[in-house]
Image (tube, rainbow, N blue to C red; front, side, top):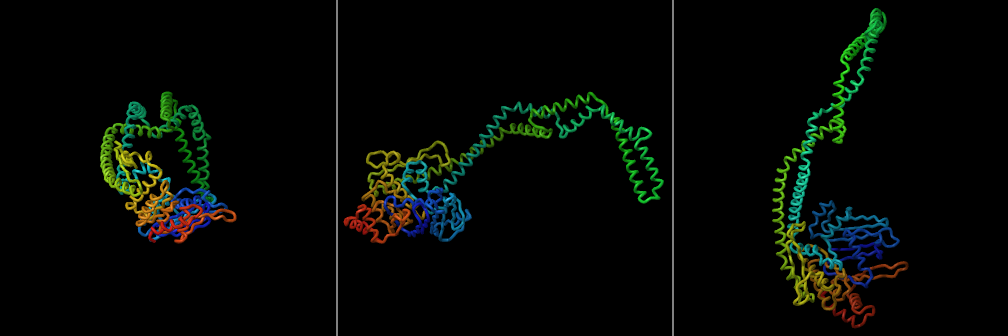
Length: 555
């Protein structure tokens, strides 16, 4: 349950520190006093987006901090999953917003994201406002009402897994069918491309070798001339380099024993001599091999030309890429041959997953249908108590004829407040006061189905007064036997039902207006309720009436 709320520098609030008790608490105050500001502050710790306008003027930062007693609600798995510090009995949520627009949130002093705040506080508190009344006519809200009452969380989780599995398999099947259709239409072209690449007998590294050979063939005459000249210098005349080197070698040989390092010098000359003789031999052999070959030149030129053309056609730059392209097309052709088998396998899988989905969908539908009559009877009984004696509720569940992520059911809650009038969609026939009472009846209905510590009613009593208002208060008080109920109200009949009573008021200070809150004693409650009954001028009759209202409540 909510134990305390601390607010600092939020809108008109400089500082508030409210301690809450279990049971039924009411909050009253004049219109514009700032009751809605408290709800706004609570919304921040529930993960609502921050607004810089929330910061009190001339302040650097606003803080909202709440403390919950969570000892009875088995929330440790949530804290562990989100790596939050867990206290056995308390959960402190703090939200800070600075003037630069930056926001920070903490759970038990552990930094937390807004998503974590939302996911956590949904287990701790429900704020019911007039805006939520408008959702009552929404199909999603009505479906969630049925599922919450039926406690379908596990059933829905299993159904959603089955739906996702079926949807994924169906999408995979459609994808492969589209691919098969596209590639089958291109089959002949793929075969032609593959044949082209296969017939060319691609060899990795061939292009570089051919380009080098082409250079050689195009310069045969120049190569022969230069090789002959080089060979002549080395060996083919009287004053060749090798013959002169030989003479130098002989000279050094004669004196090597008489000079230092003579042997080393002789060995080095001998090594050069042997190397040059080997080079001369290689040049000679190369010269004999090099010859002008027009046929080979033509073949190499044509082969390279075809290779370049092939690369351009397939938008690649190397033979390696052409080989990779050939293998890719080969794999595509193999895949096309196997499409029929793959499609049959996937069709079988889709059918199996659909049967599982259908089975889970039937379980979900049956669960929803089974709770319709109890919901109808309970809501009618509550509405009769709330002053709609001829209320009629009818829940229609119609088969969509197809599965969606939320089942195959179209759920509509129909309502009639008058005799001999067929129930119609709520949004079409219910007045504001009837919607308020219907929503209160729904909250009362769900109270035993959801393990929620705290509910706050924010002026949902629109359109009710007198005896009906008293009955609304009775139901809220009855709800407070099993959970903490806080009601922000402008009706004295409801305010008098509370076990604890706070008054929100404004003060005119030197430079600004401030919102404050105080817990009322019994005497002050009498005065507050009397003012709610008679307005700004409190009459003796209003005071007596207030005492009567409060005397109906056992403290």
